[in-house]
Structures are given as C-alpha cells and as structure tokens.
Length: 398
Ligand SMILES: Nc1nc2c(ncn2[C@@H]2O[C@H](COP(=O)(O)OP(=O)(O)OP(=O)(O)O)[C@@H](O)[C@H]2O)c(=O)[nH]1
Ligand SMILES: [Mg+2]
Image (cartoon, rainbow, N blue to C red; front, side, top):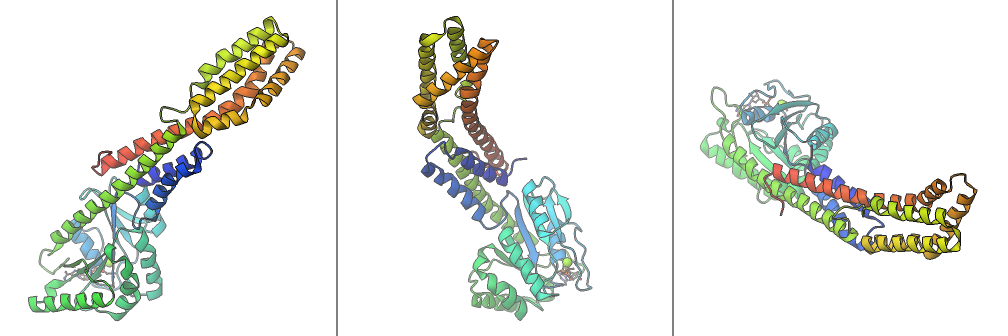
C-alpha cells in the first residue's frame, strides 16, 4: 500500500541512485523536499492522529466513546482507570499509522469506518507519575497531529498540569486543542467563568488563541453535548493536513522527476544497450575470425570507440561524461588487445572473443547502465505512489 513514507523514502532512494549521474547541485531540491517532509511535525501519513491527554477522570475515554458514538474505551468512576492506552483507527489505516502506534507502544487498536482518516489515541492519565507522563507527552507531541487536553471543571486549573505539561509545550500550541468536559456540571454563568479563567491561564502560558471546546461527553442520563462542533473542527484540521501532505507528495514527485530529467532517464534508463551492443560485438567477432590481423584490430577499435561515443552522447550530462571518462581511447585499445590475445590461445576463437568483449566492455557498461535503469524505475514507482496517495486525499497531481 502506498503511503507518504513510501514516497519520501523513494525520494531518498532517487537521491542515492542519482549520485554520480547528475551534478550534485541538481540533487539539492530533492534533498530539501525529503528533509522538509521529515521535519514536518505530526504524523507523516494521510491519517490525522489526535491524542487525548489529561488528568485522570477528566473524561478522555468517555470523549472517545462520544465521538465514536459507541463504547470503544472502558470508562469508570474509579481512578485511575485507563492503564493501557488504546487507539481508535480507520479500518483501512496506512502502514505508517501502525508503525507510529508501535513506536508509541499503543498495542490496543480498535478499528472504525466512521471517519476516514481520523485516528484517536486514548492515553493513560497524566497525574499518576508526573515525570513519566511528561516524557510520554513529549514523545507524543512531535509524532501526532493534534494533542487534545481533556479538562474538567474541577481540575482545569491544576498547577501541575499547566506548569509541567501545557506551558512547556506552548510553542506547539497550533497543534493543541483544549476540551473542557463535563460542562453539564456547570450552569451557564459558571461555564462562562471557567472558560474565561482557562483562557487567561493559557494566555499567560503563551497560548493566545487556544482552540477551546466545551463538551459533556457522558452526562448522566443525557446525550453527549458539544461533540458535533468538535468533530467539525477535526474535519477542518484534516483538510489542512491534506493540503500539507498533498504539497509534500507533489514536491517529492516533482523533485524526483526533475532528477530523472537532468539524469536523462525520464524516458527509461537503459538506452537500449543490449540491442545496440549485440551487433557491435557480432561485427567485431566476424571481422576478427574472418581476417584477423592489424586491419581487423583497427576496425574493431573504431567500432568500439564509435559505440562508446554514441552511448555517452545519448546518455548526455554527467553520466555521458562518466562513460567517456571510464572508456578513454587508451583503455579501449588496451582492453581490445588483451581480448584479441587471449582469443588466439583459445580453441573456439569466435566464442572466446565474444566472452572477452562481454567481460571487458559489456559487463562494466551494463553495471553503469543498471544504475540509470534503476533510477528511472524508482522515479516511475515514486510517481505512481505519489499519485495513489494524492488520490486518496482527493488531490489530483498538479
Ligand atoms: N457528569 C459528567 N460525568 C462525566 C462526563 N464525561 C465523563 N464523565 C464521568 O467521569 C468519569 C471518568 O471518565 P473516564 O472517561 O473514565 O475518564 P478518563 O479521563 O478516561 O480517566 P483515566 O482513564 O483514569 O485517565 C466516569 O465516571 C465518567 O462517566 C460528563 O460529560 N459529565
Ligand atoms: Mg480512560
């Protein structure tokens, strides 16, 4: 299955294969595109990954259930309750999402078909062992797209939560959400007071425009409240993410194709070597076996030189230069002489000469061309992967 990681790794491969085939400066754009993709904060995939974090009992598991419209996570009035984190992920999740969950140690995974490309992680609480949990949140932050702090009317101002967790991460506040849960416990005036106070606390921590939502995930005897607005916000975030990811794969595809262009392999990398080399070899063998002598050698020399020259001209650029440098006139002459000498000693001169030509010219040229053909194949593969990923996020290639 194609995913964004496949495209980015394909680009790395293109860069490594293209080294020596193009000028180093021509690889800068491809390297930059791969680095930009890797340094993007958040999950490098088409799924938007949202982690629910917060103190014990704030209602993280209840919120997941309310969003899912089903009992996915176990909830309880007994604290702390969730001891093993769990993920609620699309049934058709990309491989990279599973790798992410593996890295984060989230083993329990429930699948859904409710929202394509939305994954929610219900994490364990933050207050049991503060230092351990700070590590967890710090690990989560760069890997997930959104961290949602689930707060309740009693503990939303908890100094440890603010000073140890939220404030140090204020620099990433564009990827944070604040969900005040259990608003059924507040009347309208107190709700305004709590929201105002929370806004002030966050502002003091450097989060000036927090995405703040008021919900009741599991009000006793009532339906959940405020969930639709939250889900609508997820949809907006997912659209934003699609734009970013779309740009990453477009850039990767363009950079790879540009490399293929300057390497001269856009139309395939083989230069039809086998079809061209066979008649050259046959002509030399026929000449030498029929006549031999100095005239045949001169003729063979001209034939090989002409062949190498045509090949390097057709290849063009750095690669063409490499062919010419690897097979200068002196070397061709030396190798051809050596080939002819060993032919004289053999019992089947025609066959022996053919083998010698293959070993001394065919094999090294084929090795050089193999790199070009691989480069061409990898760029084609990347283009297909990028188009598949682009399609999955509703983007046509530009
Ligand atoms: N009144 C009210 N109670 C709620 C609401 N949402 C959750 N609760 C209750 O709060 C308690 C804790 O909910 P959980 O969802 O288990 O909380 P949690 O954040 O997952 O807790 P841990 O797993 O311990 O981290 C449960 O008894 C829920 O029924 C709400 O909107 N209103
Ligand atoms: Mg829980």
